[in-house]
Length: 176
View 1 (cartoon, one colour):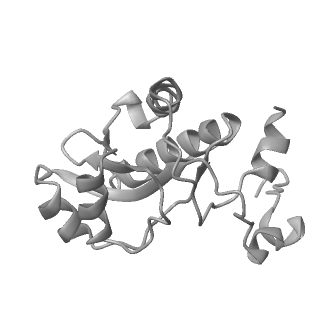
View 2 (cartoon, helix red, strand yellow):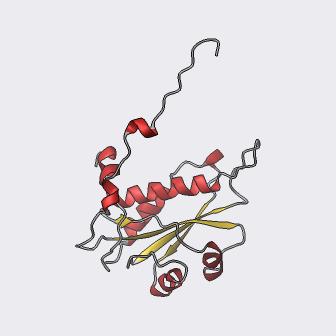
View 3 (cartoon, helix red, strand yellow):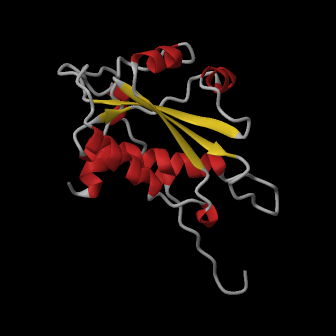
């Protein structure tokens, strides 16, 4: 699929089919995440694949936004591995994990699968429930699966601000 078309067509799926995701497709999606650029190529992302009923039940105790997906990806970063900007000590981990998540979402869409980015979860509970190392910071939950036959795009999906409101050009004349 043409990338711009893929980006336009992809939407947050809020109702999934119980159909299992094939292992081969999951591996392609995970590979897309591994291929994502990260600051200094430190690759701090840590992805937990939650693909059994017990794991999904644990996840549902951390967020109600799993939408009946058969599996989910919990995208974290390891704060001991992520690059830190020396000027202000800003940690790139959230940005790195977000790029990884985005690439996996788009790859899933290209394979005919649906996702939705979930940020509404209790990070401390996620760490406790899944016994994550203290250095792991959860960034996103990505329910993943085949969209239900009656899944629809949220009406807000079609609302886009005009380019003039979100794109600006820097213009500097000599001497400024």
